[in-house]
Image 1: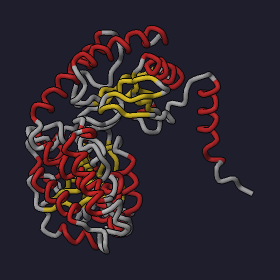
Image 2 (image 1 turned 45 degrees about the vertical axis):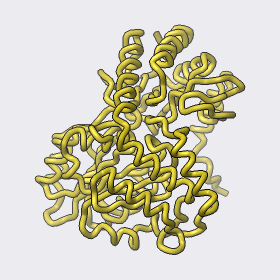
Image 3 (image 1 turned 30 degrees about the horizontal axis):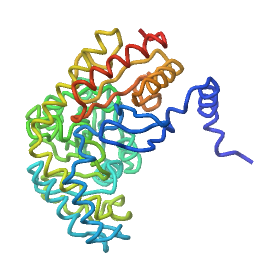
Length: 399
């Protein structure tokens, strides 16, 4: 009989070899206690968190926590139903109103996760006979949305404006076209040239979807993301985002100005056929989103942290994913998986948690340590982190 797990044998062997070398499992770390957005107890010791996507540090905001506790008391622990049945509570509407206000858009739709937002919107608006033109480094949820929707999928080289234009021009006359881009790409932390790409997409009759998961709350004058920062937000048809980054909880969303957008609530399967978010989650999200509208000082401090860490690591001799700080993500390129895992463990022993990322999640088969900064990291913590990297890098032979 065929063992359906046989296809995973190479990965099983790779993992076994890695752990046999005495390295702690980098994909199974337990946070025993979380003290703040930037510190947790791991393996019995206090550890600085530099791999959590908690960009704006909202997870322990007193107003956010209070609204969640109140919602638990007022509405119970869950909705036990879909948004189109019994699963729309006052909090879901309040959350969507907050999103519309945050983005200055007419429509907002909240999903149970950010993954589902991409899966649902992409698979519903681009179907058989339509064409999706997307960046080759797009997130897994974007690729899965393409697969589920059955559209023709045409990838282009990462951030390559000319390659995108060539592929758009090859789409048959009269076919539906959707261009899918991301504001910040989550592995290297680099940003897209959205202004040029969106202009070309519109000239070629395509609709545009931009995933701003890693830029919402932080990039742009009002924290609306890279499209706002580059002055082209009004030309974007759909903005996808998540609550699990800057908002500090869980959930996903899509905002749009399309006049027919509300029909999505009846035709989008990942929205219709799943339970809605618990009341405590949507109330915390709504409170957090409203606070992010007035978080200019936090945004400025996060930029300072990002620039300081980027320069500090580069000056120590580390190879980074970008030539300068472009977002709150800083990718430190490793020579291979074995030394990447050794470096990850050395940092953990120093008291620092980062993400070890490997293929197929990473572009071009590289192994990297992904650092996600937080607006709540102090300037002293950032200097401490640079020192930890230097000691660990020398011990492992990376620098």
